[in-house]
Image: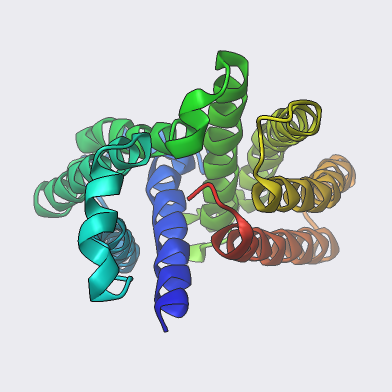
Length: 282
């Protein structure tokens, strides 16, 4: 049961992180900057997504507090575990994650209450705090700066790519008469993000095999698995561009692109599940 709860809240946390970055990412994917000048408030149609993101962040916050307090361990071990964690680099990372999560929840509340787009850049700062804390958590504190930089790039690119993909497919966030242009913009951005993920992840995996101090077999196996899946996704994204170049706004091309992006979504969920269950990073 503790394993199931931990896995569930890790997934909720990752999805929440993706969603939060997605609120910002949709600005350059769905042509929102052209429309925001004409309206100063969020559409109430976005309310369900805001609620899901807040609930995900709460779930993630609960999981991290549980890690610090040892609530997922037998009571006889929890006190000793708490003292050990609080006085370690892992504890510092957990505190930073909790701080970032509280910050994000606060700004999300401000967005909901004021319905002002001006809060979105502030929200992104909170998301980047959480993302950076992943890259500098626990065992990575002992790594060289090049590895930390590669991991930061890897995680930020994953969050941005995941978010843009998900929000492109949410009909409520798209302008129906501009869908092909939206997908074209997505493909232009996503191919570089996925390339950054593959290159930075490959650097980390190769470095791990060459450096005997990086003794984290589960994490490197997970990362290698993710990279192999992302190579397939990279091909799909280039296919988007190929189809769009020949597109004459026909239904056939729309169906091909939509199905391709659904495959990307399925692969993304596989990556999230793999990360939550096999990786020692979180």
